[in-house]
Image 1: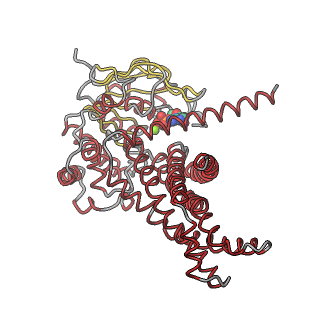
Image 2 (image 1 turned 135 degrees about the horizontal axis):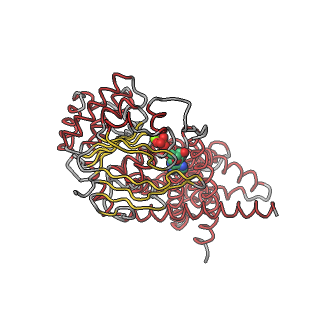
Image 3 (image 1 turned 90 degrees about the vertical axis):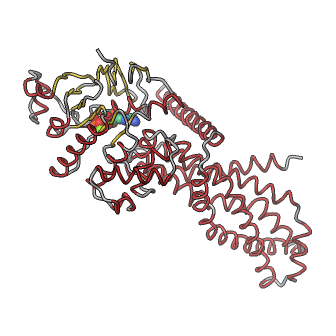
Length: 257
Length: 256
Ligand SMILES: Nc1ncnc2c1ncn2[C@@H]1O[C@H](COP(=O)(O)OP(=O)(O)O)[C@@H](O)[C@H]1O
Ligand SMILES: [Mg+2]
């Protein structure tokens, strides 16, 4: 009986959390589409979310492209298919690794930063202060971050895709003795625009997830520095999990022919 | 009789199983200054936040200028919010913005005033609380606690509110700075002709800035009267509180 009560309470807690998140998401979406639009704040957030994430996304994409080329080469070698490296690298990067790597890097960098900033504002009553100054905190804090993340992520991913392919190219040509021009020709011939756009759609969704989870956890942080620390952890963990789950769902939807 | 500026009728609020407000009845007359006293964690801040709509009460009615604002939202809520100014306990300045933009925030964001004009007003308001123009361009984190309170006060009065709330305005300040803040509260409230509702556990401050005092205990207002009557309240709870005695009917909960 005690055990059942325990399970019941756990289920109720999860449902309550999901309900709260759904309400928060609804309010955020309503805030995005209703005037006024804070363009200045969106630009500031695009700098913070997009521009300053370029180095980390670029670096990780570069190494990811390189290691992908090496693995495909070594694996393909077993059945004489090592020539397929350029095609698999570009497909893997644009469809999958580009957006996912960018998403996970942003989850670590941006979701944490957003949760810490908004969480601190919450526990120091700055969010209450916004309300008393006739400013809707969801509109002022959440909407610009979500819009900025949704716009920035595809751009970041596009840069990451290019650098990832470059990483694969460099490893293939300088270490695996591929012919440079032929590698590029194979890459370009094989790539469909769908491969790139599907990745960019994923990136936009991942951007939404990261900004939303950062804001949600920040808004719900309680009780001082420790509460803000917890909010930061939850934001990173939940957005990372949601990115991988959404990745599967989006892949199934986008390539369902 | 005039319509009260603020009226609370049977306001109740609990968090989980913990009852914080258990039927608050309170009236603030226009142009008067009421101070609510009470121990830490008795629900003073919750009372103010209920009036401001930051916390929604479970039961009861809150009237401002006779209008029931308990359940209003959106544009109607914004309109009422424009009557209010609030000085928060920790000042709650926006640390991403310079001092002047903190003061001008309600004018720019809440009322759509042009930035240049709002900045001029912000600098005027800063002068009212004794801060010079060079402070306007500093970041809040560069200021001392007393200066942050002054900036918070300037922000609270920036849009010439009809009602100003002060949450523990002197807590955490040295006695001299506390007295300066008390004087500033009196002069600024008079200056804009506002009604003031303050909460504090600092009796020196309470006596100085109030016309009327109400004491909150056990989720209810257990005594209220003119400030001059506080020393002959005949109420053992009030007696214990204003003399700061450990012995008496008030039992402090160890857990807030
Ligand atoms: N948002 C909240 N959620 C849960 N409990 C709260 C919340 N706000 C206040 N409380 C609780 O209500 C009680 C009264 O708090 P408060 O009004 O801040 O006290 P004070 O009289 O010192 O200002 C405290 O025990 C506090 O923990
Ligand atoms: Mg308080």
